[in-house]
Amino acid sequence: MNSRSLKLGYLLPTLVLTATLIVPAAFAKGKTFTGTVSDSMCGAKHAMPDAAACTRACVGKGSKYTLVVGDKVYTLDTSDKATLETLDKQAGSKATVTGTEKDNTITVTSVKPAM
View 1 (tube, rainbow, N blue to C red):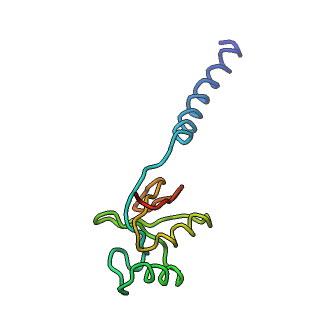
View 2: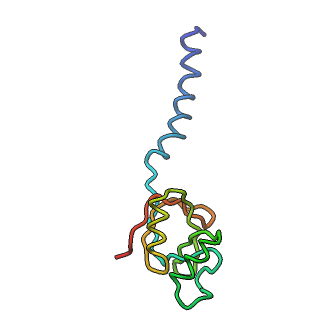
View 3: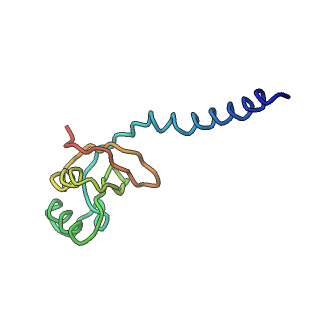
């Protein structure tokens, strides 16, 4: 076997493996979820009558934002200031969150008021 064939023998599997790892990530858009913005301490049931005030109070004490969709409560993972501001404005209200979900945590790429 000559050296050119040997190099091609290593190059082809390397290219296929690289494409397999990179291509899905490049086309991943995320999924859209619509529900009520809450917090991880209260979930779907708030201790205070005003859900928005309760959510803001709990988040102010270190709780994470969540999205309640039916019976499921997803933890929202983001450190983007604009996204956090939007979540604060939508506290207790319906919102549409786009992101990738894994183990009931959504890594948020965008948030907007639900229509």
